[in-house]
Every structure is written in structure tokens, then in C-alpha cells.
Image (cartoon, rainbow, N blue to C red; front, side, top):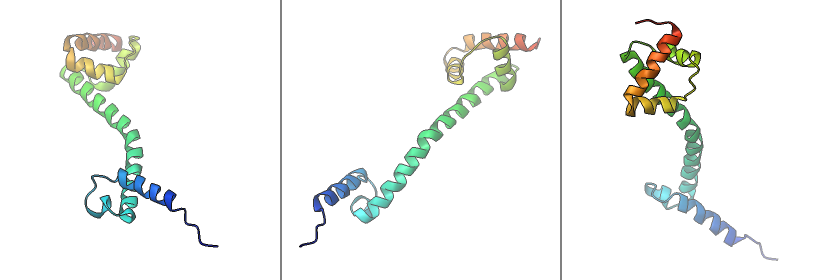
Length: 121
């Protein structure tokens, strides 16, 4: 009995990997052996970075909020504590967008945070 290799499945699998490797430099886009490694690495990085993206955006929002708070005489941690004490529940993304696009409204929040903290100047 002849040896069965299931050629159609193998070709389909290789074609799928080479399609994912389209645009890669050199042999990584043309030869299955190298494309497979490159695609495996790329998928690992993509999985990791989908999660890392959330951390990086949160850090960006905090930096933006801190910058505008310090310009108005309060630091980030006291500002956030003041908002919590005043019963204002806004996430960091909303606060960052408010600081960028509507500075007057953000300054009102800063004043409320200062009064809730007991800061008088």
C-alpha cells in the first residue's frame, strides 16, 4: 500500500502561513520554513501588545492629566483623591479628553478637587 501524505492539507496549511507572511522582507515572505517562524513570532507579539496597549494608554492619560493639574497648582494624586472625595466618577480617558478639548470644564473639576481636599489656594 502506498504511503499517504495528505498533500492537499499540507499545501493549504503552507499557503495560509505564506499569506500571513505577505509583505515580510526577503525569504520570510517566500519560503515556508522561514515564514513559519516569522509568523509565529508576529502572532506572539500581537497577542502581547494587544494587552500592553491598554497599559500604555492608561499611562498616557495619567501623564496628560498630571501635566494640566500641575499647571493649576495640584498634583495628580491629590487631584484624583479630591475627585473621589467630591463624588465625581470619571475615568482617566474622559479626564484626559476633557483636559485637551475643554480646558474650562477641566479647571472646574480641579477647583472641586481642591475644595474636597481642603486646599485653599
